[in-house]
Amino acid sequence: MIVINIIEDGRFGGPQAWVASVAERLSKYGIETTVVLPEKNSNSFLEKLNQKGIRTRQFSLHRLTKQRTHLIRYCIFFISETISLYKLIKNEDVDIVHCNNSWQIKGVLASKLAGKPMIWTIHETQTPFYINIVFKFLGLHFCNVFITAGERVKNYYLNDKGFSEKQVMVIQAPVDTSVFDPQKVKEDPQIAQCKGIKIVTVGNLSRIKGIAHFIKMASILNSQHSDLNFFVIGSHFDNQRKYLEKMVAMVRNLKLKNLHFYGPSDDVPSILKAVDIYVCSSIAEASPISVWEAMSMAKPIVSTDVGDVAKFIKNGENGYVVPTKDSTALAEKVSMLIENKDLREKFGQQAREIAIKHLDIEICAKKHAQLYREIMNG
Image 1 (cartoon, rainbow, N blue to C red):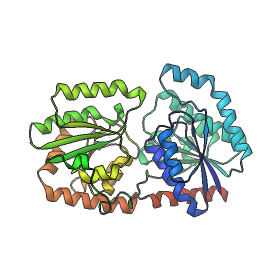
Image 2 (image 1 turned 45 degrees about the horizontal axis):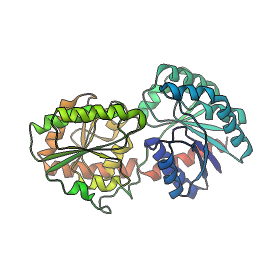
Image 3 (image 1 turned 60 degrees about the vertical axis):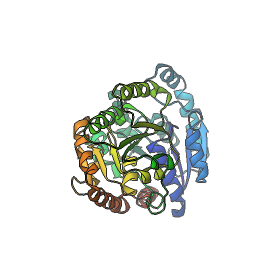
Image 4 (image 1 turned 90 degrees about the vertical axis):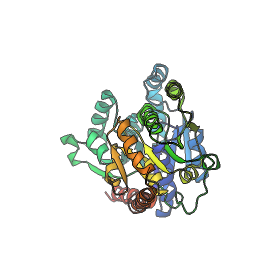
């Protein structure tokens, strides 16, 4: 079976990690994937696909964005890029087209024009209203099969009566629990040399990740405890530079000398191995892969109530879930873990067990293979 997986945003993040890891595992089910990605801003993503031996095709694909110049280019090249995708799908021996994200319109139109079966995966829980309108029109008329990254995504996009007859499979973002295994990983030396309790968050530096609330939480905890170190792990894209500068200024104004912007890392397992507590301060998520990775590394979790986190993190059992945009609540729960090493270890071990049972990459790949076969069998 041949699948073409189209993703218009080549900047490496959760959806890109999902596409790469699943495509690698599907080969053992007799399913070969070709990932179609943009020519620009895709270097890291392309490198990871090549390392995994996944076939790729790069096109001039402009992603939909609020930035004026990008939006203009998106509109100008919309028809030509849709035609290029159509020709690829039509000329290749393709069985299924798989499109990603609610705003990926060109891949949906191209697969419809080519007359190929299509799956549409939705990864997010916040979009501008005009994208939601376009998605619902195309979803109702052009697509019969959807994957949603969690129940909240399903409820956000597919709650209209018209979608009741569509086939929907909920699949969480995957984590490779054999790679994110605390027994196999060495500590990141830069973080390991820091003294005291180490608290981390991982993700691209965007507003949606709630970095400002992580910083405010750090300020509160510094007033209550000593020997703490906070780390923000992740890259920033060009359109996030001003936000990063604002966050750096916020850290400086609060005099948080123990909060470190680590930057991007190609070895997240070693970073998680070296820290004591993982915090997700996001404002919105679907299926936060960074949380699942921390769970797999047996770290105690304090997370805002985003995506399907509350489905896997139970208060007082294997972590804590607090309201979004509530720095005080984050600090309160993290403080409880700072003061109780036994609780940290208990939560971490139970979190890993849940990650293995419910979130492992093999579970995700098997569900994809099942859905592909159902489509091929009519």
